[in-house]
Length: 200
Ligand SMILES: CC(C)(COP(=O)(O)OP(=O)(O)OC[C@H]1O[C@@H](n2cnc3c(N)ncnc32)[C@H](O)[C@@H]1OP(=O)(O)O)[C@@H](O)C(=O)NCCC(=O)NCCS
Image 1 (cartoon, rainbow, N blue to C red):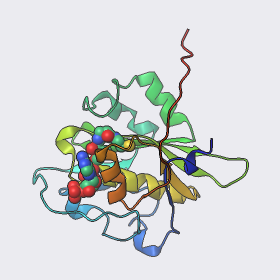
Image 2 (cartoon, rainbow, N blue to C red):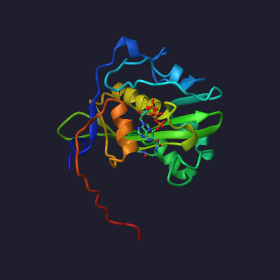
Image 3 (cartoon, rainbow, N blue to C red):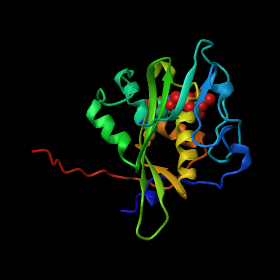
Image 4 (cartoon, rainbow, N blue to C red):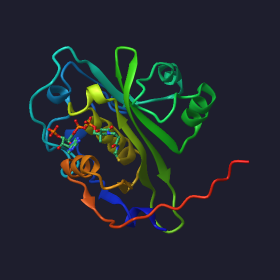
């Protein structure tokens, strides 16, 4: 199955001077107000989203691509973020793998959101970024954190030379509303998932 053609996909527009992070390289954004300090609107149509008002005044969420040095952050994670508590050995293996990436949202020392992805290398086309999982803890939702996580992944994917970024999601109102708010185009319908359990 050619995943990108079966899910929600958006081509990554070329990088411009306007969206370069101030210091170059990986951008770590800290926002006293995520809505106010998120990347300027419409820098990267159709990836950028329009935000409304209504933020928590006390909120200071950093969003950045986690590296191995950040492994300790996975010891203090809001229960909503992952399906299960992260295992230190698995975290280390994940962060060490060159094709696996994860953007995290951290408030003080608590991880409140994440977006993980795989850089897919194909024999017949350039690399693409598959968003594997996305989760924001309930108290932090509708405050731009999910948008910032996805934009961080898209920006990193662009830096790595990926030509598209895509996700396969159940078309719940939540997921549909979120991905469409980013300007992503729905390219798959009526998808079914098939699984074979390989555990001994
Ligand atoms: C989906 C999810 C990641 C969104 O995270 P978030 O931080 O709330 O997203 P944002 O605040 O950046 O929302 C951006 C826009 O997406 C849309 N949106 C977000 N949540 C929505 C919902 N529940 N219903 C409809 N639209 C929604 C809105 O247009 C929103 O902008 P607005 O708040 O100004 O109206 C989060 O709700 C979540 O973790 N849900 C549980 C996991 C899940 O469903 N993952 C599916 C993703 S594949």
